[in-house]
Length: 208
Ligand code: GRF
Image (cartoon, rainbow, N blue to C red):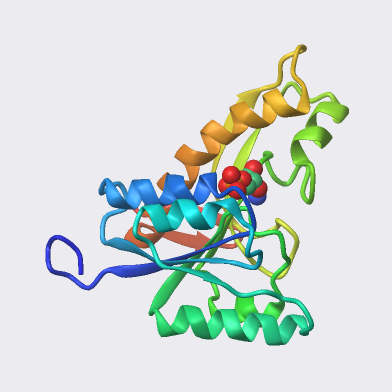
């Protein structure tokens, strides 16, 4: 329930590691920056993900669903039912290091969000910050987008730009982008949970 007594919109966050974006989302929800939302569960495919303990410290339920010894379908089916049992409406991928199958995407169509550390469609996939430096771009940033069947290719909800400095290493650039990721993800989740948008073709437009 929300403070206003309305039924909260449940968000599930999938992680595989550190979980700083997950924490940024959890803090935004706690501080009322994502009105009407509640983080119902933080789920990891890796038992050693550092983010799990940090979620528990905030009183959020955590769950580990490992892939080992199972097909992708079996693994995802278990994740989908865990999310459904908790009434999850929106799924946020926050450093979740597995590709989701079309089945998973179909179960939550238009309700799965991902954050990527580049200005998509530039530099999809792994090591986006290294790709940006090696390519020599002067600006990079981050993108929050809806997840569809393509790799980092769904409709873009929001982006933030970060300058690439001559002195940047992959690490310094990643750290500057990460600070923007935390702001962008909370803002995008608030927009999506609040329903104040429409998707026209590939464009996510703010409703007037
Ligand atoms: C972030 O850079 C995110 O954009 C990418 O993976 C990283 C996860 O970091 N998808 P964290 O676990 O949220 O700290």
